[in-house]
Image (tube, rainbow, N blue to C red; front, top):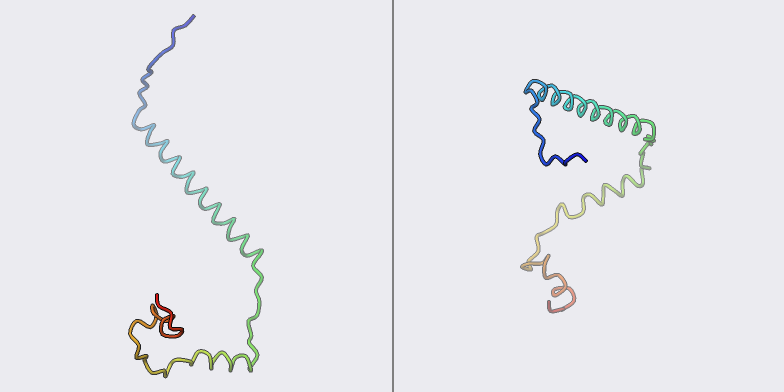
Length: 93
């Protein structure tokens, strides 16, 4: 019956290690490029373009909404954002 070997030492030439490293890096780059291309093809194939035209009445409404607060006067209550319940409802926090 053969005796089990507890330790094996293998010497690999430095040039072979560098070559293997280059091959692995190239494989990773190629795989990354393939994944990127697959994702781009999927998005192009499945992305449905849609026209986003807003009717004139709705457009006017959005313009009014965007203007809200542009000419507002600053508040006089300190810490209004953190103590709004106390100011609005009288709740003690």
